[in-house]
Amino acid sequence: MTMQAGTVLRDGVADAAADVLVGGVQAAGELGLTRSEFARAVQLGIVRPGPRALGGAARYARAELDRVRSAGPPEALRERVETVAGAQAAAEVVGVGPSRFTRLARCGHVTPVGYRINRYRAVVWLYLTAELRGFAARDPGMLRGVAPPADRELMAAGVDLRPRKWRGRHVGLLLRRTADPWERAAVLAWALPEDELREAVPDPAERIVLAALAPPPPYGHPQVPAAAAVALRLLKAGPPDEIHWYRTSLDFALTGARDQSKSTGERGPT
Image 1 (cartoon, rainbow, N blue to C red):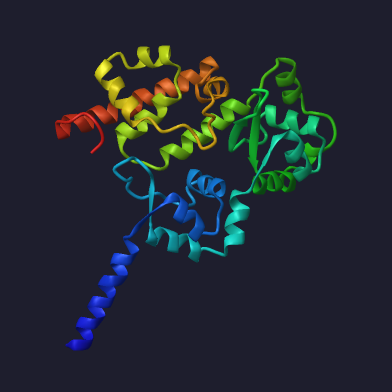
Image 2 (cartoon, rainbow, N blue to C red):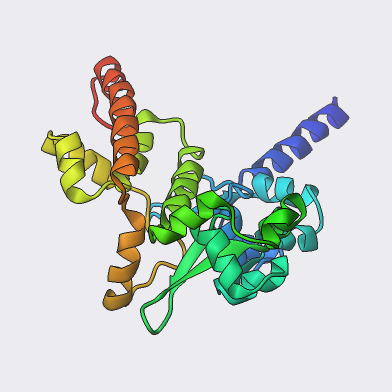
């Protein structure tokens, strides 16, 4: 009986330790990542955040950190989240010139994972190194020869798919983090321009709920007003067909959210 009780006690201590929540800085250090690498790991769903602190800061369960560590050494994790910034650096990874890489990116063959705004208020796109290498290995024909007709048409029309492709990726990652219909609706509403959102959600009370649940700006979003104004344009859908997709998806999500509210008697996430 004494040994059994001791075993229960040890299991209880282990369970309690696994439930301990730590802040992002400590979590990054325990995983051997820098702050930016850790933010990318969270963004990509490699590290899953736990319940937020009262002040809204994300926290991470010890069990989650143990799970990530058990998947491989820190070097492998860093390789998964490693990024390069700009066409020159990305072109070197895939072994082409910057102008060809820019065409590949503008035509949607590679998708940015993030952005930053430089001192000249220009957008610098970030790419996952592992994805660039995978693209080069998967589609070597795209790295040489003339551009395919579809790409030539896009370039002649001045199309740049990088913002749209990034938005789609970011919204998809956010949606995978939650099953709550109100939170999912808030993610979709976040990507709509204000006038489109007002038309899609005419009820002011619902817009307040969606605004309260809106995701924070992506990691690296600038704080300086002039740069933030440039980055803000990246967050909102632009082409009519893209706006239509977000509005249709938002309508569907709101239908589920409203049904939830009818069953619980409350507006907002359960």
